[in-house]
Structures are given as structure tokens and as C-alpha cells.
Image (cartoon, rainbow, N blue to C red):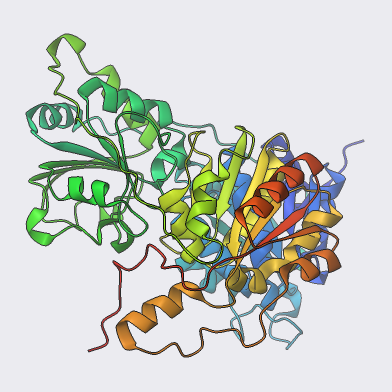
Amino acid sequence: MFLLKTVADYMAEALRNLGVTHSFGIIGKSICPIVLKMVDYGIEFIPGRHEASSGFEAAGYALKTGNLGVAFGTSGPGGTNLLTAAAHAKANNLPVLFITGHQSITELGIPQCQDSTSFLADLADMFRPATLFSKLVERGDHFGTIFNHAISVALTKRGPVHLCIPFDVQTEVLEECNIVIPERESLISQANIDRVIDAIQAAKNPLIIAGKGINRSGAHKELVQLAETFNIPVVTSPGGKGAIVWDHPLYHGPIGVGGSTHGDDLLNKSDLFIVLGSRLSDMTICNLKRENHPATLIQFDIDPTFVGKILLSKTIPVTGDLRDNLVHCLNHIDPSTITKREALANADYSEELPTLKNLSLASVMSTLSDLIPYNNSIFVDDGSHGFHAAKWYKVKKPGSFVFDAYFACMGNSIGMAIGAKVAAPEETVLCITGDGCFMMLGAEINTAVCKDIPVIFIVVNNKQLDMALKGMEKTTGRIDGTLYEVPMDAVKFAESLGAKGYKCETADEFTAAIKDAVALNHVAVIELLTDRDEVPPTAHRTLNLN
């Protein structure tokens, strides 16, 4: 006998067929039918402690799998709590499907708890600027068309989408519903490839700026091949850290906020920038002088919004998937016509570590990669600790360092690390966060404990909003609102939620703690009591209130 299926059935079945294995969120009445059907169809539900964290977890899952992440919230505040995670996914080109509940269409116009209608908090409208597509599904027979479009946009354009689905639409029975699983398409820009090769050949001092797009597209081998083909030095943006291993002969260090002096010097001496997956935000080019903009800019980016619009340079745009375009470009190079330029004699971008009375975060970051297994991923939160990591951490595994300095949302790495560990249980996954970030969304470690997701959280506790404090102090002479009069005890908090806690005030204590945490294979929180006077590598980007 043919069994009729509900909208929730069709969605859950389609997500399972797409390869989704886990979903993240907080359950409630308005979203209950879909969540329960996902479980029935074998998609494990990871219940969060805050919807924003669940959204970040779905983003970490999407980043690690390359597949669709799924996060959901109830109507009203459950949905609005997801908005920050949606904007973060958009800024990072991560395909996440955000699903929110809605009161039944048949009850529209009646004031109800957690209203998502145009009478209070219209979630479909609110999500539009934070996603690539957002739509209220008003009827069951519209679901198939809307769902097909949403997942196609998410997976081909690489970004978040949102569906707001009323309770009665979720349970509506359909005689048929045609769901089409999108296949990956190669997105390349053929028109300018010859111009790209000619411009590289003509340049005297070219420079590759490797951005976040290298890590998102997995184009690490192609980056190295391009650099080695022409002997071009490589620098990385803050988000592009890890695009190339730290000791490659052609790597000349990070640039911008958290960058090296050597890398920024190269930035100001180049006549050609080959920008691979970077928007060239202020965090990347803050030390580039206007008079030193290169004559020519080659900019590869999946999103054309800012391509050619930031610098004064003549621009050759290459839009579409970064890895596909690099493969296409490399296949068009005739090695016999290439005259390799001499590599720069000195690729040493190292700088002297600070000498401090108490524990130096820079020193800790410079040794961390020596203490953990090669097969790792490090998710880094926004703040001083993030830029210390961007400057000092030595990436040994390409693509293993994940840092968002663009949307820069505090607390995102806590959820991202959990979602990534769900997707890649064989990896050692670490999260580097600060006390400010941890007090926002640190309760999410209980999600990891309850579901046995053994992430190692490194909490930098300097008892202040360090990046804001140091920046305000330098530019305004004031530090209002940046000190914690009653500082947190991260170890006690972690232990109260079921995690193993370590308190470290010396480098030796940290070394012992990280080795023990790796061996333990349980959720662990390592609290670093660092020197409050350590100067973060963020002084280049300051605020002028005059």
C-alpha cells in the first residue's frame, strides 16, 4: 500500500539522501514535527544550549564535511537567536540550512507565544540580509520547489539559506513531492585566464595573498603549485592562515592585523597582487600604504561583491569556485614558456617573542603545534587571543587553522569546534577562545559532554576584554567596560558542566595539560592565566575619535 508522506517526511528523507548525518538546534513546539522526523530518518539530533551555538555547530559541520549543515530553532526568539550564526555562515561561505518554526497558517493573525509573523518578528524577512535565500513556506504543495531552490543555492553558491515552516505545513500530507538533490558543478571563469598568466609573467615583484577562500575550497595543493611554478612568495590574510604550511620556503608569513613585519614589507613592494579568496578587508591590508597599491591586481573570489573595488589597481577578476579556477589556470600553463624568477633570498618572517613576568600567550601559541597530533583542526575565536594565534601558531597541516577576522563574532569557535568534531571524530579538535567569548557561549561545553564530543577548549583568561581594552587605552586613554571586576574561574565552570579542567600559570603546566587532554579523549577545558599586560598584535588597526 502506498503511504502518504508529510512535508516533514520529505524534508528529512531528502536531507538523509543528501548525506546529512547530524542536525543541531533547540527543540520546541513549532519545530517539533521536522526535528522528530529527522531522528526517525536516522539524522542524529545534537541539542544545544543556545541557538547561536547550534548554528555555529552546523557551520563547523558544513566546513569539515563540505556538505550541508542543518540548524533549527523555534519560532520567535529561537529564530532570532540563530541570526548571528547565519550572518557568520554567510561571511564564511558555509552552506548551512537554517530552519525555523512558525505558528500554523490557519491561526495567522491570532497573537501567539513566540510569534514569527509580520505582526512581531517576521523571520523570513529578518533572515534575508543574513543569508543567500530566505522564504516562508505557506503551503505544502509549494514546499518541493522552495526546498529544491534553497539547497541548490546553499551548495552551489556556498552560503546559508533559511526556511520558515509553519507547524501545520510541516504536518501537511502530500501525494507527491519531487525533491532533486543537486550535483556539484564546476564553476570557472574562462575569459581571463590568458590575461592572468600574461600578467604573472610580466610582473617583476608579484605576491600571492592567500585568503580564507583557500581553506574553504581546499585549494592548498593548487596554491603551492601556482607559487612553485613561478617562484612567487606567499603571504596569508588572518583568515587565510594555514593555507600553506608555516615552513614552506615560499611562505613569507601573515599580513595585516596579527601579521609579520616582513610580510607587510613585501605587501608594500609588490607590483602585482594575486589575491586568492580574500575580500581585502581592513584586517588584511591595514598596513598597505595607498601609494603602494600594486599596478595590477588579479583577484579570485566566489563572491564578486568586492572584487576590484578596494584597491586603486587595474583588476583582472576571476569569479567562481577558487579551486576549480586554479586547476583550470594551472592546466593552461605551458611549462616550456615559463621563466622562473629567482626566489627571495630570505623567507624568515619570525620575530622575537616577548619576555614577560607571567605566562606569555605568544610563547604558548608558538609551541602548541609541537604538542598535538598532526591530524588536528584548531578553531580560533575573535579577540586578542585570535590574533596572537594568527601571528605565532605554526600550522603544519594545511587547512587546519580556522579563524574569522571578518565578521568576527565572539564565541563562534566554541560551536564550530563541536560541529567539526561531530563530522570528523578521528581528528584532534581544539578551540582557542577567551574569557569574554567563553562567558557568552561557554555553556555549550555541556552539549559536548552530554553527547561525548571530546573537544579541547583552551580558554585564555586575562580577566578583561583584552583587545577592546588595549585598543581603547591607546586611542582614547580610557578603558570603560573592559575589566571584569569579578573574573571567571573557567575550571570550576567547566567541571560543573562535566568537563575535565586544567588551570595553567606556566608554560610547563600548559605542556602537561595539553598532553594529558589529548590522551584523555574527553571534553577538556584548559584555562590559561596569561599576563594581562601582554601587548596583542592588533595595534595597527586603531580607532580615531577626533
